Image 1 (cartoon, rainbow, N blue to C red):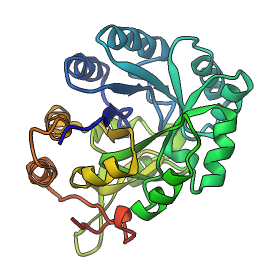
Image 2 (cartoon, rainbow, N blue to C red; image 1 turned 30 degrees about the vertical axis):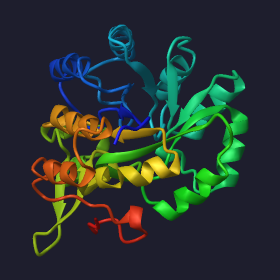
Image 3 (tube, rainbow, N blue to C red; image 1 turned 180 degrees about the vertical axis):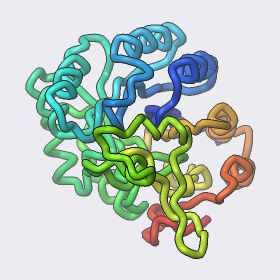
Image 4 (cartoon, one colour; image 1 turned 45 degrees about the vertical axis):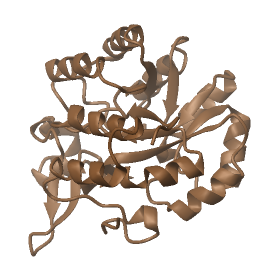
Amino acid sequence: MTTHIKLSLGPVIFYWPRETLFNFYAEIANLPIDCIYLGETVCSKRRSLNLDDWLDLAVILTKAGKQVVLSTLSLLEAESELLTLRRICSNGQFLVEANDFGAIQLLSSQKIPFVAGSTVNIYNTQALKLLASQGISRWVFPVELSRANLAVMQQQRPTGVETEVLAYGHLPLAFSARCFTARSHNLPKDDCRLCCADYPEGRLLTTRDNSPFLTLNGIQTLSSRPINLLAELPDFINLGVEWLRISPQFTHTVDIINVFADCIAGNIDPHAATVELEKFAPLGVVSGYWHGKPGMERLI
């Protein structure tokens, strides 16, 4: 099964050390990935890399043949964050993933095309058409919507707007002004001591009977198990989806990318590839939202 679907790698959503990030992207540069999203999307206190570092990485990855997109914060709370946002939106070289309407306003007012991230919450065709008039060139499908929702929206999608779907990774569920990771250490947000650095895959939250429930990632709440939609590749083809996104994992991202690439190239059956990916998710995977069911369910 050879397809025209392309692979993207989302921004790193966890707090990783500077050297880890540079080593990670040095390895990614040689992999069969078409587009790489760069930048801090969760918390501005995470300063392993500053904006100049991200821009330097963007140049390196562009020279390696990758499309690079700069991602913005999903929740802005300070003037300093707005200053950084303005720099990102006015970078003049790289496409921007707008993760809130402040970024959209800045980009649309300058008539700069952009990607609308999943946190923009485009839930219907009317919203998609409105944002298309503001300049989106690509939108990321909200993770909590279903195949049926996407089918309707694809039928009425504005011309020239590409669709991207998160196909592998922890589901981004919510953001809050409160830092849950700091709270779990009985620390105030203003004195968090960057404790999220101790959890490069987020901090697992379990129920009273010790079942995996959520993942705490600073101010972000994620699913405890990653979504895996590789088995749905035929559906994505039929629906006209252009991009499948993989969210970076602290371990096995390289393996996950290679399995997806082999499947898209027709070298391995989607269901066989799905089984191959199981070994990289020790807590299991989910796919419920795609089927119109509770998100934490797994349906093949």
